[in-house]
Amino acid sequence: MERSIARELLEDSHLPQHVVARAYRDLDRIHRWLGNTAAILRLLREDPVPVRRVLDIGCGHGALLDHARRRLGVDVVGVDLRPAPPSAPVPILTGDAVVDPLPSADVAVAVCLAHHLSEADFIRLVHNVSRSCRRFIVLDLVRHRLPLVLFRAFLAPFLCRLNGIDGLTSVRRSYTPAEMRRVIGMALKETGGRVRHTVAPLYIRQVVDISW
Ligand SMILES: C[S@@+](CC[C@H](N)C(=O)[O-])C[C@H]1O[C@@H](n2cnc3c(N)ncnc32)[C@H](O)[C@@H]1O
Image 1 (cartoon, rainbow, N blue to C red):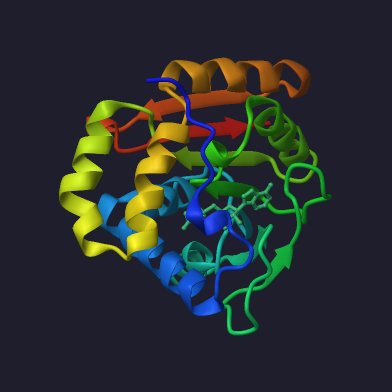
Image 2 (cartoon, rainbow, N blue to C red):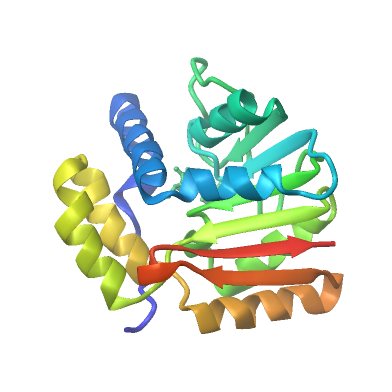
């Protein structure tokens, strides 16, 4: 399957606020059902150096940071291209994480952001994060037929129409494990750093864990 360059419906900057809020709420539910939230919290909890501040890049309305703050007691900050509503549960800055200076934090995470980026921008994002964080955890989808079939059968029926469509587009836009390893390898040529790359059973997610 070729990597798709189709845009996702959620990328439309003219969507009404309530539609966007519903989509981010659905995403939070999906991450909890699939164990993505638990996987990120576990990695943060097991960090050998105490984590005081977590930065979520492409954080949407901040649901993951809200979980991290409540469950781990860490300080949190988010960054997203789309301005967050005043009711967001955590502080969220508006900006392009590929090029804008990022707030400093012990650990940065990015969940379902990588597939939005070209390889060149993904590499620039890794370089940008390396300037202000000592660790970067990237969790994303895997481009493979199995998650497409599973998403259509078991998740899409429970989601709003927008996420039902975007979920399939996201899988088609995501990196295969081999592509992910190649791109991260290129990114780390310049900054150095150690990387651990894991792929979950049934290809439901892949996690890249970079330490500098
Ligand atoms: C699929 S959503 C994922 C949201 C959230 N991380 C989650 O998993 O529920 C991707 C998010 O990344 C944001 N985004 C895309 N490109 C970005 C960039 N260059 N800088 C900051 N945020 C970006 C989008 O606005 C969107 O909120």
